[in-house]
Structures are given as structure tokens and as C-alpha cells.
Amino acid sequence: MLFHHAIRVPLLLAVLSILGGTAPLAFADGEGQPDLDEAMVMRLDAKTLDDLNKIGDLLQSALAKGLDKENEGFAKQMLAGVALERGKAIAQQMFRQPQAGNLAQLRGEALKHLETAVDNDPTLAEAQTLIARLNALPGGDRTRALKAAAAAVESLQEDPHAQSEAYMLRALMQTDIEARLADINKAIETNSENIEAYQARSQFYFQQQKFDEAVADLQHVLKVDPTNTRVTATAVKALAELKRLDEAKKILDDGLKAKPDASLYQLRAAIYRNEDKLDEAIADLNKAIELQPRDPASLFARAEIYLSRDDTAAARRDLDKAMELNPGSVQGVLLRAYLSAEEGRLPDAINDMKLLVRSFPENATWAIQLASFYQMDNRPRKAIDVTTDVIRREPGNWRALRIRADTRLSVGEHKEAIADYEAALKAEIEIDDSKAGILNNLAWVMATSPQDGVRDGARSLEMAEQAAKLTEYKQAHILSTLAAAYAETGDFDKALEWSEKAVDLGKEDSHEQLKQLQEELDSYKNKKPWREEQNVEENKAPIFSAEDIIDT
Image 1 (tube, rainbow, N blue to C red):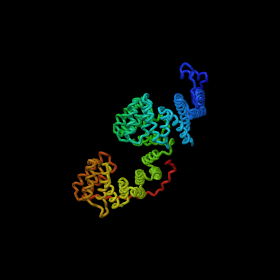
Image 2 (image 1 turned 60 degrees about the vertical axis):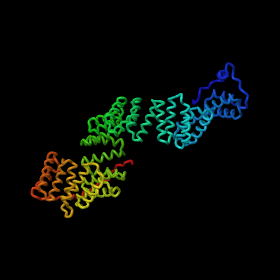
Image 3 (image 1 turned 180 degrees about the vertical axis):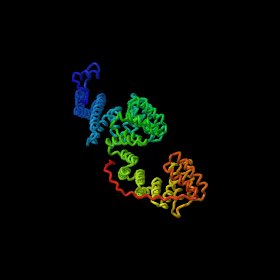
Image 4 (image 1 turned 45 degrees about the vertical axis):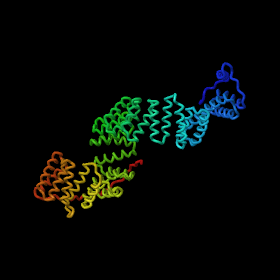
């Protein structure tokens, strides 16, 4: 039942007696008085929306026909209350059936009654608030919503909690950023426990990139409600962006004490992983999986850590379980490709990367990874084709240029490789090791190419010195290039000096190319510069198409 329980007529006489004093209220003369009398009787016995509709019609009829001043005021107040009830009932019907096809019609009817309510009693804050809420919905009258919210704010000065909510409602309607913030601040000032207001202000601060202020508001929310996992997660992500990881972990610790939650364990695991505390990360992911064993996110994350530890068996177990739960996961397909490559199953890795590149052709990073897998599988021409396509779209993509240059070296296209390396170096490369790698490879081909017209000892030496400096003279293969550059210029004493250092570093690091490093040193002892031309034989074995389907 939507309305008050029925009050029988005997009680009506008592109510009328109270209104008029000790004696029953005498109905004043006026043509509308009979309609008002009937409406009063029906109001006390109303049970349905139809009853309210009839009462409203009677009250409007009474006012239209005419009443004395005292009963006119009474009738308007009564009409305002009835109209509010009618509007609320229709609005509730809307909210119960948000997918209904007649929402616009229902909203129109509800607003018609609510406007009647405030026309007859402008101080009726509940009606003003509902008018604002209904007009705030898509397709509503934003200006009317703002006006109604303002009226509610004024009417609720004796009720701080309700007024705070009204301020928040008006804030939603504000198009001016400063006006919106002012209303949110007033909502907090009026009711310091308004959690919604603190959350709204934190979002505002995030948009303004005032991260410290945003975090402070979120921390206030968590003091009131430490079990709010969504706010905890937002605060932690903000602190992580600010590199304030100790504070982020403290919030996570408090949140997990208040309420163990899989998503919070996942977040703390991510922080531990970033700190290279892999045992702690795995422990948190174990707890997340215990709480939500069918959530693939924790399984994917744990698989990635196992893969980083070269524990391919454990990584495969987690990945297979996660893919059973979410077979269309892009993250899963990508992880599976890396895992397959680590297991030496390059055709499988290639198939998965091809699937991703077809599904997301704009993703240059994945295309470059596909080219890298082709290169690893001795399919240089395919790698060149893929990187060429990326470079056509993104001429300054230094990663694609680097891969194509390396691949061109492997098929003897030294001039073309040099052009790609030089183009890559024109880009902004912020990673020292990456820049050093390009400089090193460019210097190497200029010092060791057997192709006439390609070698340039002086330039090779310049590039090799830069690469060695960027890596603090601590990488054996880069010192090997520096030695080759000196040998190409004819300075074999320097070539021997750096080649010996390269061999020593190679021995310390168990370098995979230690044998070649030693052979280079022997060449320089014999006053011979080093020459190298790679000739990778194209792997022509077919790669069968992947049968996996990815949901894009």
C-alpha cells in the first residue's frame, strides 16, 4: 500500500474539532466548500493512486470555485501534499521499471503533479528535490533542475543533513566548475559526514590534477567507512601515481583488516611486484584466489610473476585455468604468446600475436612484438613486412625502425639497416639502454661490414663511444663494438685494450658470445679488423592458423 492506512469518519470529526478549537469546525460559505469537504473526507480514507487523483481533482475544483481565505490556504496546503504523493508514486514507478518504454511520459506526469505541489507550497523541499532529480535525468530541463535544487537548499536550513544532500544535488546541475566546487564545499560544511560530497570533491581534485587534495578527501571517507573497497582502490591508485607507495600500502593494510577483499589483495600484490617483492606479491595473489577462485585476474597476475621467474610450468597452470574462465581475454592471449615464446614454441607465440594484431591493428607495440617473434623464428622477411607496415603509419617509431634494422642486418641489407638506425636515432629515446643498443648496432655494422662503401671507422668510433658511455663501460658486447671501431680506424692498441676488457666482462657474466669475443681479440692481436656478415636462412616451415577466437 502506497499511502496511509485508512482513518474512519469518526476520527475525522476529532481532527476537525482540533482544527477549529473545542467545537467542531464549521464549514465556511463558498461555492467550493462542498468539494473541499468531500476531499477532506476522502483524504483520510485514501488507499490508492486513484483515490489521490480524485482528491486532487476535488481540491482543484474547490479552489477554482472559490473558498474563503482561511480554507483557501488550507486547501492549497492539502493540494500540495496530495500532489506530492501523486508525483512520488509515479516517480517510484519510473525507478522500479527503468527500462520501461514510457519513461518520458511517466516523468512528465510526475513533474506535472510535483509542479502543482510547489505552486501551492513553494517551501515543500521534498517536492523541489524530486523535481530537480527528475529533471537531472537525460532529456530533462537542467535549468529547472538547478532552480528546484536551489529552492530545496533554501527550504532546508533547519535540516543540515537534508540541506547537504540538496547542495550535492545542485552541484550536479552546475555547469560552472567553480560553482560546482562551491556547492560541494557547502555540502561538506553543512554536514561533515556527507561521504558522497567528499567522494565528489576528490573526483573534482583528480580532474584538476590536485592529487594530494584528492587523496586527503578519500582518506577522510575511509576513516568513516574503512570497508569501502572502491574508495580504497581509488586512493591507492592515486598514491601509486604520486609514488607514495608506503602510504598506499598502509591504506591497503587498513582496508584488508576491515574487510578482506580480492581486489585489494590484487592491488597490494601489484605494488609488491613493482618493488620486486615477488614472494609477497604471490602471497597476496594466493589470498585473492582463495577469496575468489573463479576470478581470472589474480590467476593472470600470478602467471605473469611465475613467467618473470622463468617458472614456466607454474605460469602455464595458472594461465590455462584463467583462460578456461575467460577464454576471450586479450591479456590472456598476450601472456600466452610470451609464455609460448619462453617455452620455445615460437609458432604458437606467433599465432597468438597475429591474432592480437589482426584484432587491434592500431597497436604498434604488439605488431613490433610479432616482428620480434618472426625474427626469433628465423623469418626475417616477415619481420621486415610487419615493421614496414608500422613505419608506414608511424614514421618516427624508433622501436619499429630498430627491429627492422636488426632484421635487415641478418639478411645482408647493411645500407638499408644503417638508414633505419639513423632514422631511429632522430627520435626522442628516453631509455638509455635502448639508445645505447641502437648506437651500438649502428657502430658495429659501420666497423665490421664486409660490404665496401658501408664501413666508416671514424663515425663508428663516435657511435661506439656514446653507447659505451651510456652503459658506463659495463657491457661486454658494447665494449666489443668499441674495440671493433678502433680496429677499423687502424688503432689496434686501443682495439686490444677494449677487446680484453670485453672478454674479461664476458667471463664474469658468462656471456653467451664469449667464444666470439675471444676470437675478436685474437684477430686484433694479428692486426686484422673484424668482419661479420649474417646470413639467416629463411624458415619456410608453415605456421598453422590459430583456432582461438578473441572477443574484441
